[in-house]
Each structure stands twice: as structure tokens, then as C-alpha cells.
Image 1 (tube, rainbow, N blue to C red):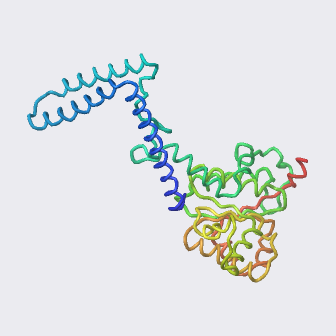
Image 2 (spheres, helix red, strand yellow; image 1 turned 180 degrees about the vertical axis):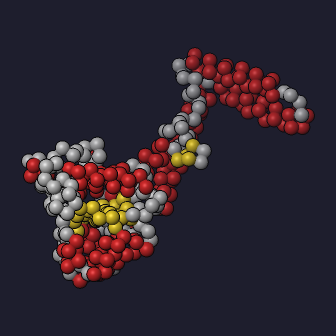
Image 3 (cartoon, rainbow, N blue to C red; image 1 turned 60 degrees about the vertical axis):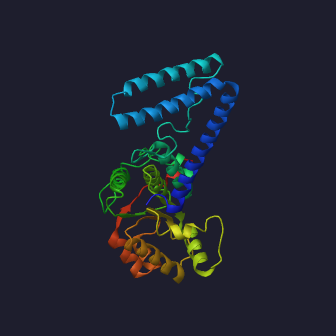
Length: 326
């Protein structure tokens, strides 16, 4: 999905404004030079006339005068450049200028998005994600296995926290590499401070940098948005548009599920949200301190069934890293 149509249209309008602004600036430079150096206008008029007459002559007479026309235009252009330099102006003073020379301020090079448009899209997606500043700190470049224990073994998996985290990261890397081609969702669970949120942030940054739209919400904020959109029909604040995007963004990250006040509304709303996204084949990542047993007990059987049936379950265990790093 990337951007919404309205967001893309707004970007294209900015490109239009940029081109118009540069055209106005060029017109002002041309008027300035014509007033100061009339010979430049004569040269430009001659170039235009030669070009038009030459094209007509070649079409009507089918003569090979292209080289002659080219030589005349080149001589006039050289004269113009020389006059501009003599008067203290650069050769390209009467040329169109662009903010981006690669796409000429259109956003596209041929049929492909220019790097400037891609960067603008990514910037919007970062702003929309709600965690732009966090992702500058928490990403795979700053991720480290250093603080995961390699001595103790989990009795169920037989893996140490370090070995397990290597497996989890490999799964997350594969998730990133296949995102957009394969529909998958993740459920990251484990005790407080083992790196669940950090890892979801790593995934978010990688996908936003690939121009996928990602929205991050804490579970408390998620249910606040859903409650306001359900019970307050005139609800409107700076983040009210998130409610309509929760179902449409490429990836929805729900962080710290279970920290909200669990009741029938939250259980029902959670199911509706993840079920609707499942029907639309839109991915979700949930991070939580809840065990699978607690997930079943706190929410409904249908929430438990939907998650365990359609999500890749990733348990992270080990010491509280935040305590270690203090």
C-alpha cells in the first residue's frame, strides 16, 4: 500500500508547485536579461525561428538540412553564452533550474520513482508510524546479542537465551525479506525487558525504508482509538485519522498487549481488528508479556484461535536487559 491516494496526490501537488516556482524564476531572469541585454532576445528569437522554419523545410522538402540548422543554432548559442559571461552571468543563467536534476522535479525518471520521491514517501511513512525518533536509536545497526546468556538452557526448547535470540532474529529477517510477497504475522512474547519492543522497532525501520506503511501503537492507545471511533462519532484530534488507517496500513504493530484494562470491549475490539486485517491479508505484529495461557484467559477463545492459527509464535526469554544495562 505505502501511501494513501490523498498523501500521494499531495506529494505530486508539491512537485507541481516546485516546477511552477522554478518557471516563474526563469521568466524573471529572462525579463531581466532582455531588458539589460536586448541582443539576447534577438538571439533567442532567431533560434526559435530557425528551429521552426528548419523543421517545416525538412518536412515539406525532405532535404538533409539538419546539420546546417544545428550549426546555426550552435553558433547563436555560443554567442549568447559569450555575451552572458561578458556581462558577469553564468552560461546557464537562462536555463531552467530544478530542485532535483535527475527527475526534473516530476518525481519520476522514466516509469520509475526518483530517489527524491522515494525519500519523501519514506519521510511521510516515518511520521505516520508514530515512532520516527525511536527508530533512529532502535534498529538492527544498534541491535546486539551481547547481553543474552549462553549458559542456561530452556527446558522446553533446549536452547540458551542467546541461541534462541539468534533463531528469533533469523525469523524476523526472513519476515522482512519476504514482506509484501508473503502474508505473515508475528506474535512476540516473553518476560519484561527481553527485547521484544526493540526487535519490533528493528522490523519497522527496515520495512519503512522499503516504503511499506507501518503504524505502531501501544495496546492502551489502540483501544483508546477504537473506543473513540466507536462511541464518539464527532471525535477529532491530531491522531484521529489513525483509526481509519489501522486496517489499511501494510503493517500494524501492537505493542505491550495486556497492559490495557481488559474487558469485553477490548476483547471484542481486538478480535475485530486482527480478524479484519486477516481477511484483508494485512500483517500484524503483536508484542506482549502474556504467555499463551494468559492470552487465552484474558481475551476470548476466538482471539486465541485467530492468533495461534495465523501468527508465527516467537518466544523470547532471558534476563531483563534494562536491568543489566543500568
